[in-house]
Length: 226
Image (cartoon, rainbow, N blue to C red; front, side, top):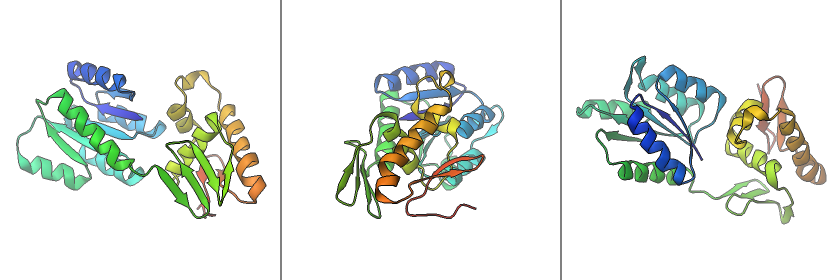
């Protein structure tokens, strides 16, 4: 899972990053809202941890954008303010949790993991006749198990996760490859082709639609793209 931290407290960020890395989370850290927006434009995050006030503005507008664009992304606001009014405003803007400084790092991580569990509790996704078991990395169409492994499976599961959105090649690369800058976008085309050969073609269905000049979208059952 990938977490974006937007905070200018460098010492706290370092400690939190190390603790989350030990638990298997991938973290990106920035100190400004505009840099956070840049990362949100190229990557999908499971959770965003954002300071309420930063040098280039308040977090409320960014929170609203996150919840509009990727409603399944959890947002936790961290704040050094003690006024309950600020907490209410953050929650009304769409934040899922609010924690005040100074905080215990173990408590913050526990709250992060609680939010991630809440947003990822459904390990079996069923869409019409298609079933994806994300725990066991297995795909079924009706009663037929489909052999899709490795990166093709990861690409497929990722598009299913963001099935209400058009996903760019760059977003897929940054989400699924450790060193995306060393990989060409052609690897995604190969993965998509394998998905179509193993799922779409044998069963006469369409699961992944190519959106010209924009990317891909999960399209089963068939959806209309404007």
